Image 1 (cartoon, rainbow, N blue to C red):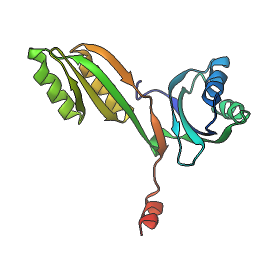
Image 2: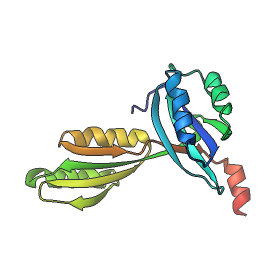
Image 3: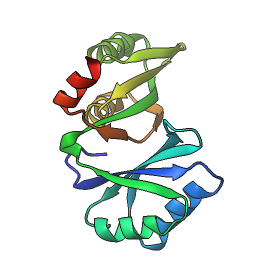
Length: 172
């Protein structure tokens, strides 16, 4: 996913019930909105989940999306996260070709990007990297020259950046 993409990041707090994710995804599909990334996991409150949805600005007018989402009974809160004022992370796991000649270069690349080697075989390595989606894009592009056997990315998760003043007060 390109970092220069013009996108919305929506953080949707929902009741953690069967079928909620299917209803949210179905809403986007029925309206032809392009979802670039979708991540869901339990939230800080018992019985609730947070869904992070990254959508193309051109395909999905924000006001229309939020109105439609709020019609879903299990949606509690919707926040749009400005990419400039949010913290975004994603996880990439890839198995890459790394024979005798290439192994040192792949290991160096993983070290430079502060990634991890999570499995080793004779001709391949499985690596992981956590970070901003732009960093993962760059890493993936460089790994591609060695030959990616398999790759999985989680999709981004995001929260608003902390207000420095609020953070200082909270720590004291």
